[in-house]
Amino acid sequence: MYKTKKEIEKWIKAFNPEQVERMRADNYLDHIVEEDLNGSERFRGGGNWSVELVVPRALLDLLPEWESKNWWEVGVVMDKDGEGVFESEQEALDEYDVKSINEINTHFARRFYDLSLDEEEWWISLEKEIEGKTGLPFEQFRVNYG
Image 1 (cartoon, rainbow, N blue to C red):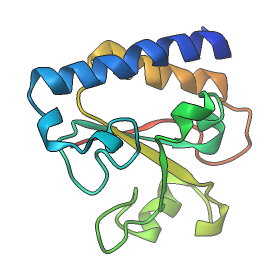
Image 2: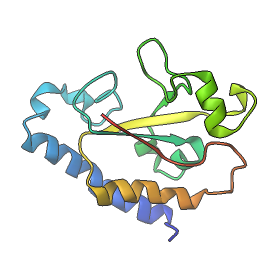
Image 3: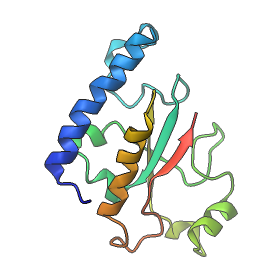
């Protein structure tokens, strides 16, 4: 089922406070600087996160601008800090069936403290909005568990 921008925005406006409440219930907020509560740095480079979603720009463009700012660009190949999607360039080439790493579109990530199965499925359901429409090798959500 396709989602309108309004439906997406409404769902995210309800979802984000739920994330904060889960963190509060687990006393995790005590370890976070107040300025980071709404920023993308909250789980970047560590932190207590359970799920990392990785998306292409086309999926990020479906989100309200204020939400898309919570996502950051990640390399297709992992860097020295272990941030990225694939352990090797060859693995990425094989996954997307391309001849050059430059053919692979940009990846963006966001980490979440805790997602229910329904919430994870909702995020993944956004794939239907762009599936087969971009002509790019990366059109789906990638889910990594922390």
